[in-house]
Image (cartoon, rainbow, N blue to C red; front, top):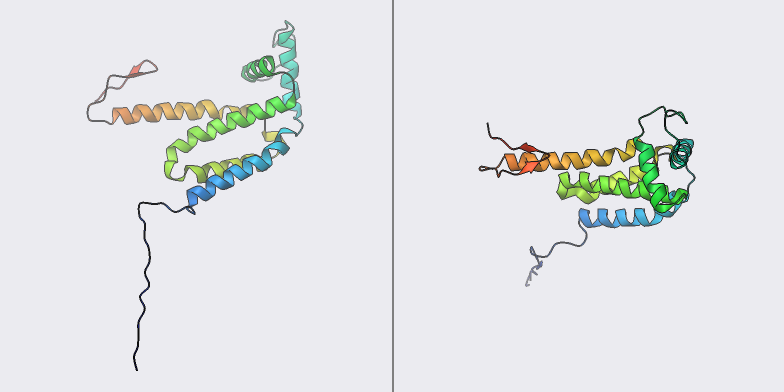
Length: 181
């Protein structure tokens, strides 16, 4: 009686990454989410806040002055953004929605740079949250202000990395030098 053993050979290829890793799945899910959810988001109507900003924009474009000719309870920053968007691309609500999506996408891009190993997972989760919130949260200055904040964080992070080098270069970021104490 003979007992034969069979060996199981496994082929390991450490130099070739797997196609089904979490980054690729998250990137695929992100692309699928953006492709399927964007048309519905773009076609949604805008809220009364956006209509009020458009009214302020029309007043300024016709020669009116904020705080004198129309009531503005906030700082005029969003009105200037609306002036730029409306002046360049027109008065359609789809234009505002697309600009909102682009601004949010840029914000996610700058935030995902901090967590590069899981950037696609984070991007997927942020876009999932963006598409699932109420329409009252879209085309709002609160979301738009995240972009300059994310850019400022990236600039500060670059400055901190340069300052932590052994021999920091004498590069200037916003007129401040990197001094070693």
